[in-house]
Length: 264
Image 1 (cartoon, rainbow, N blue to C red):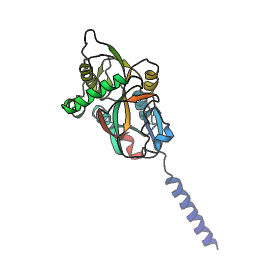
Image 2: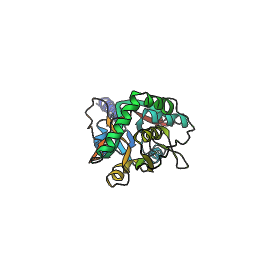
Image 3: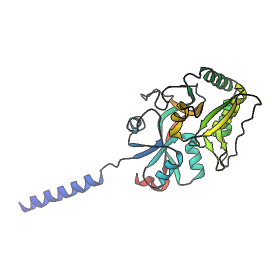
Image 4: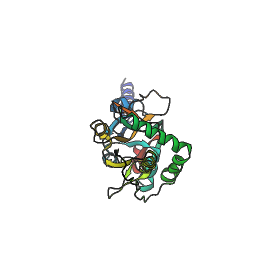
């Protein structure tokens, strides 16, 4: 009887240790705030785990470094920039989500939206967009320089909100000057629609408020799902606004700290 008791005790002890060691860790993922959904809703479409929204790119990087999140969910081109500039970052996996990048205007700015659409379609047709992607995304310079937007004498000026939260797509240099792909696209759009563009830096999470309040006339960027998943088409689209045709497309990936990967 004593032998049977000891055997049962050993089984319970081993079983208890195993269940404790096998307890699955909740993976915490950080991403930029989406404008028309919640972190809980976003988690359903992003590969599981606990989703955490951040108002800007810097606070998200700080959270990763501090161990408050296990990974950053961002775009492939942004991940490429991150890993090229910091050896502690590594791309963990593709999330199998693809997004289209669009511009957002207030719904009543129909003429402005049509003008942007015409410019975007012409840039696709004549190869300009492909050339800008090749220069600023595919072959990006790790030491970027500012992109100048030419001034058109006597032309109307529109205010465009940029975030700096998606390097090298939406990027602002340390001296406050805009650079990267989005700025290059805007410079080309400005020439084609015959309007001056004044760039206004805003936080990613403030895109909706900046647009609907009239602080800016255009938000450069919002994203719309390009895949056939069940994600809502307006998860990042502010209410009461219209979006242009897409000017860029990118895949969603996770970026981890390489020194911590083994512990995930």
